[in-house]
Length: 398
Image 1 (cartoon, rainbow, N blue to C red):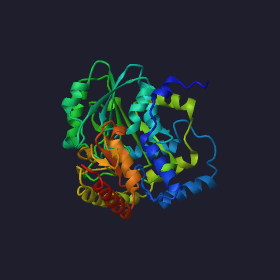
Image 2 (cartoon, rainbow, N blue to C red; image 1 turned 90 degrees about the vertical axis):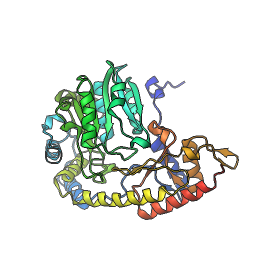
Image 3 (tube, helix red, strand yellow; image 1 turned 180 degrees about the vertical axis):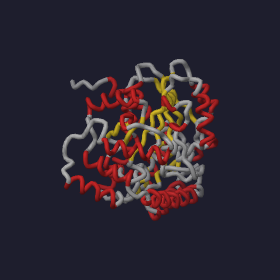
Image 4 (tube, rainbow, N blue to C red; image 1 turned 135 degrees about the vertical axis):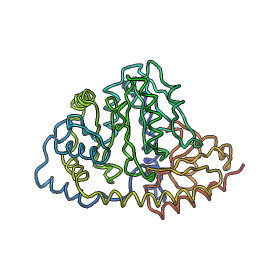
């Protein structure tokens, strides 16, 4: 009998990737499925970035790369952090990885010991919990609801902290809710964390530029916690470069060195061509970022307008990213034929099978009773998907 390790058996499959796979299978069978399950911009990578990648091929950037990334890219990232966020990092504090997901996992594996507690405000991105499991840490899930705009309060944070807390993971703008913490809201959390000097702050800022709130505050900008904050970011969302797989961490030197040591043993450096493309993303024109942000803003307004009219959907106004996280508990208990919609997972499957719209169960983000919709798709697809969902929901019997 083939043995599978205990650590893998403890891990759950990625719900977002699982739903995307089901969508692909249905499409292959000829079903017209609108995929609102995947967190991926539908725009092509901007031309000037693609041209930089082509030049890199012609210039023979085809050899192994330094484990933490090309120095030129790390310098470009330092410049980005300085000009956009007011943060002062040296290239030695930057580690480029195969996507922000790897950068997050590097940070967790490099700092969390068995039994260490990690505070995760929920709803939370699907992989945080599983990464902490992989590190044999203990997840402390602190949930918030749509009524509080899905944001952790200082009181909740204070109540969750213990002498065993080693890390808190904060994501703003948020996946899956699109919520954005203001400067004052972050400062209130920082004031609590200032009393706990051994707690690492892992700041997932990958959606930084898809922001409709008018401002963005990096957690690294607060001097009270700057020396123990690890910033995670990358090019996938802002520059429509998901497939290029380039993310980075900006961290205290000791953590950056530990992450480099770890990465050196299991992937080494990220793709040479993708790194040169990412460098151009950071040093080249930023107009493409604003153009896409404006498109996402228009789509945000459209999806909120349409979803708020669907029976049983309770929605808020997300201030960033490209997700809507409606509460759907009013639909639970309803029936379709001989089936009862008992959970938000049942509803997500019903919408896939009956409306041919792929969404994700909120339970995957540690908050059942909700579903996640990604509006990183065309306006026409949004209109069609919302119409299909509304029509399917009408078929449910109370």
